[in-house]
Length: 299
DNA sequence: CCGACGTCCTGCTAGC
DNA sequence: TGCTAGCAGGACGTCG
Image 1 (cartoon, rainbow, N blue to C red):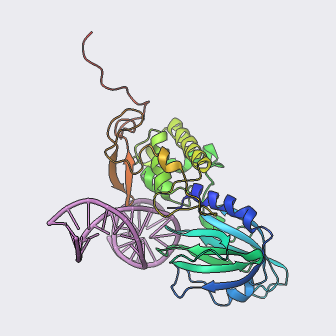
Image 2 (image 1 turned 180 degrees about the vertical axis):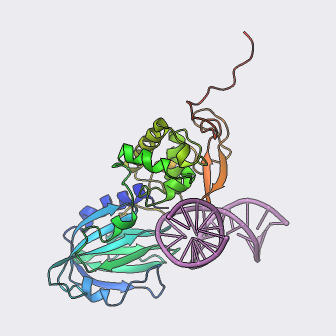
């Protein structure tokens, strides 16, 4: 499930492979993605040159120098492909001679015998062309919150104080912090020693700071290990991630907590399975440092 | 206005 | 051994 670290890995992998490449053709499957690729976009991107790749939250932006943009823009317009990997999307650059997998929805033929492929078995993902250069962010900033590494501490505390939503729902809300999904929400809450069901407004200033730091720390470490591969995820050159080996709670129901050795629990919150350690992440009161195992009574 | 929940989609797996 | 029901979840629409 591509979240920020996985998307960042794809962008870093693809950047050197795509920058400077020219799109010489587009092929598409008959199956529809969440947002269907429009036929008129074929002509717009054909002949375009990739000038760079960016990430915003879980979204990938492929910057294009487009000689024939649609929408009446002048020639040489800066346009963009906005890509979301959804649940199972794979965005890879490979030699055109490589055999084609199933569920391949879009193939951008590139110069120098390369292909940019979008594969997505579950079809929650999308690739869209934006002809307007008016918005530098193509509207993403209108509904996306902070990047995890760029959270204002004071505003973060204030925003949490204003919501009665539980922390799991808050973290999954892309308008709050962009890029956090189910895996990294659970891992960040564990690292911050906060119970996922606690309302945002119940946090002390110290707990808000802990959560903010935990989100950034988890994301940083996950990017270092190229993200988590649970099932489908691969980077831009087809490599799997490694952070799944470092998950403390996600997907580890019943297994020992790496800190206190107590069993990891799983409840349903915000419609998602939520993994946590009941001892290290107490529901009540200010989350204190994990207590050592019950010590023998008496002295 | 805010929060909760249903919907989309396919592949894998748990359980009979 | 074979079948099927249920689960996985990111974004978004709808409902209360």
